[in-house]
Image 1: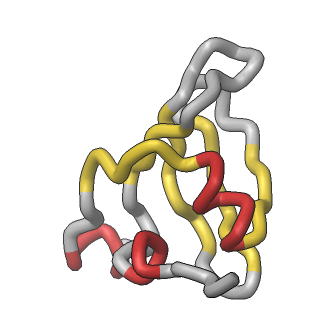
Image 2: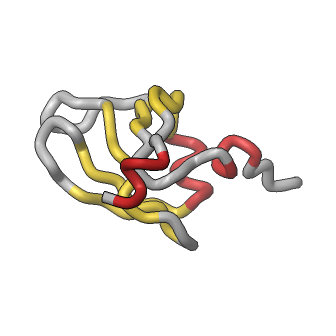
Length: 75
């Protein structure tokens, strides 16, 4: 089985993503706060932070709603 990480290569810090299932607070949109071996996410509804492996995120992510602009990376 080959690992297809093509969907994750276009992730950048500050991107807004939608997950397949809702968070217990009712929100399903998250902002990418950390990139590395694990991906850091923060819920835009309640502010809860989680860490997911790249493989977990690939399974749970539905779509990338908005790409980060270069100005957001410097903030």
